[in-house]
Length: 330
Image 1 (tube, helix red, strand yellow):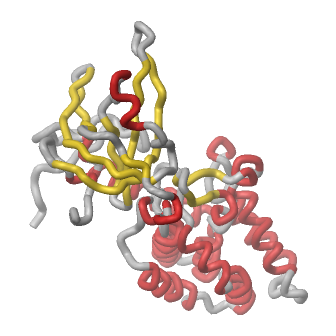
Image 2 (cartoon, helix red, strand yellow):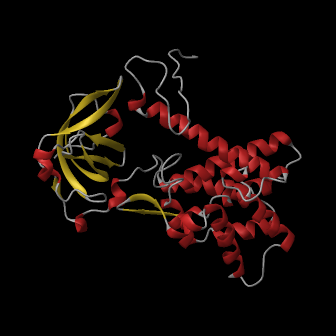
Image 3 (cartoon, rainbow, N blue to C red):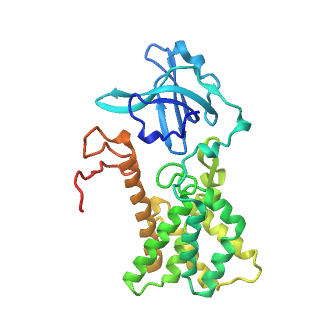
């Protein structure tokens, strides 16, 4: 049996004979109307596009629909188009569609590198720094055992920053650490409020995103309401279930504001802009975590880099090229 396959590091000439999840299936036609199919397949490490499956071999990919686990045999090649190169998988044998009941699609989706237990240790250390009793009670009400199970498998986005199983937990920890450091540097900011706001800012993504055979997708309420507003509604439901509110109406109003304003601007999805120092800090911490991860993703995406080049192609996540320094600072 072949060992684990790390898709991002495959090089031209490498052989693939592995079970992979069909991430996308595109039905296309040439200019003269001849049909062909393009599959994108992947596992926990990433994804790769297959070379075109032409009309005479369409039966090779019969049943290989998005969300199905398939056994793929092929060779990695470098495909040149319009002056740019892309690694592709040239399928050399019919794709075998495997029974759904033998696999969990989630096992073939990208995962964060750190185990969930270690991430929760970091999360709980940040949570333990909060000394204000009302804020601790709110965090306890929201992050109960059942919610933690949901939270740890939710991605940070459906595509983009932290788009991995466990991505939301990792992103939240990063935001809390950045926000706390900023609050200490500013001095006049309330560190308890900043950490609590950071831990709560994206809780709505648990209801906004789904993880399944189709990959990371938006739920109906994620599309119709959005994770920012869903986060406020979720916190309010959790607190109402307690019967006796752990904080005053004014305190709850401020927590609502921190969640609603964390995208910073109306055009970026925030119903309101930050109007408190702590809300502003959480917004910038959220943006810093997301943008830094976009850079890391660009550095690791070999399809963005020409061999020996120091500058990448344009990253769609960052809307720019990035520079991978050729020197060290040791």
